[in-house]
Image 1 (cartoon, one colour):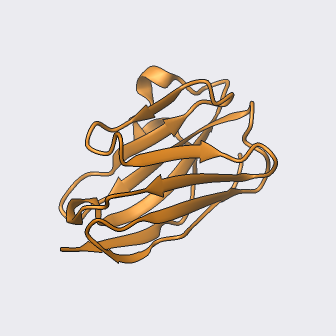
Image 2: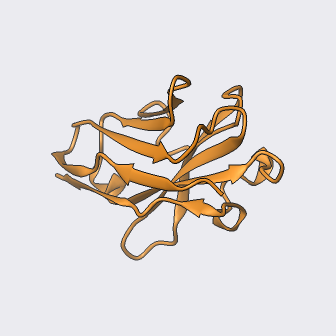
Image 3: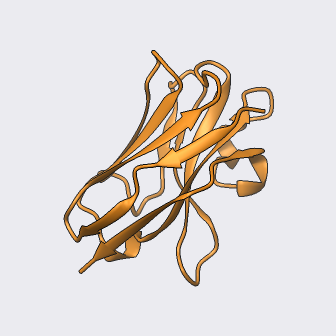
Length: 128
């Protein structure tokens, strides 16, 4: 399974932006679907944004749609989550997760149990 490393978190004021980076040990293009999850205090881990192995399907949690953008750099092994107009409720630990296309199903993209590769997480803190 691919190994992942998250980075790019930090502290910003409400309305600010951050760009998270997920660096993979091998190219995920055409091979792995990737989803960003977040863990907020007092909440279960929740899926935020998904990109299919070929990039043809992208999904977002409704609360972030229009503010967050997931993308894959097809020239190398990085994926990004651009987060704009951040809100205090976006604060939490963010993780990227990947699953091989053989077992990746878009209709279950929000289920953490589907993913076998996880980054270590990067903290995002948004102050009001």
